[in-house]
Image 1 (tube, one colour):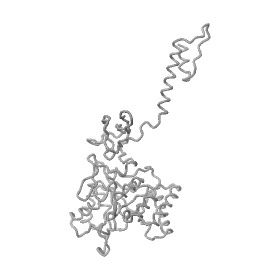
Image 2 (image 1 turned 135 degrees about the vertical axis):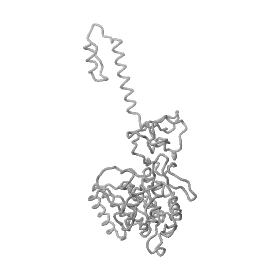
Image 3 (image 1 turned 45 degrees about the vertical axis):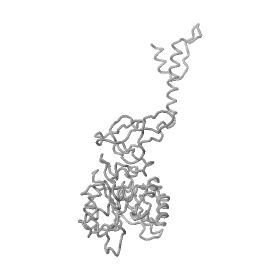
Image 4 (image 1 turned 90 degrees about the vertical axis):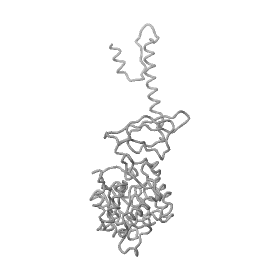
Length: 391
């Protein structure tokens, strides 16, 4: 028994020297024990050295389903990768789900992926692919909607961020899709943390949406709302107005919303008069709440009723702190960005709104690089939203 205890304490893989006896051969038991140890070490090494065993899953979980059996070998397309669930999971802990890995020469293999139930966003590698559970088909195009399991576009299409409580700055650059070359430059030059806003009157919005999401940007849709002195000051086609009926305004809203997909919310384009009228603004905000979208108020009107209506209708809400490029001068834009940083350090977060002018894009791009070195986190607009559904 004493010898056995010493063997257990001896490190694995060391040669066990037999006691000196008249016979110089190994006993059958010692040889067997040595081979068993070497086999364990060999198998462990093979497992540890195996390269990326679960590469490129063919299905990506964007919600937290209940524990299910591994799917059949015929995998669903990536665009329909969201696992179906009968009801949201009741447990608050991580869930284990089975997904189909990429098919190779051999039979399909199932991989086990652990997901936190609070994480429902898309994998950035497929962020340009619409989640079909969040789409309502309409005559004008795809409309955003809540999924049957309760997931909202606001949650699924949000860009991930650190979740830390440090100083955070969110920047929204609007007017994308109006100029093709300007849109291409903005997507290519702006850091992925900067949120992009698309004008519904633009062209090729679906293509630009995919390019923006593939580059990592979170996006929002701009909606033209009636300003004062309308129509002398005109936001463009299908503007929502205070004189229109709720049904007429919803039709115009649906046209804007159906121009593309994969956005977390909408942002006003003008709208000082519309946003101050409760009869006009009320149905508009209720529709956003119904569809699971956020509302970004650019902060240009102090009379906006959006904060109170958003709280009432369960709409995630963000208010801009300042326009960063009202004056198209590099020094003036940098001064506004520095003010954003000071506000973020004082309050925890700050929101800047700009447009996709070449000067704005170049100035924001260089400032973001330097701000990160100073400890400022640049976050998507969803990261600073007040969400009534989360308390």
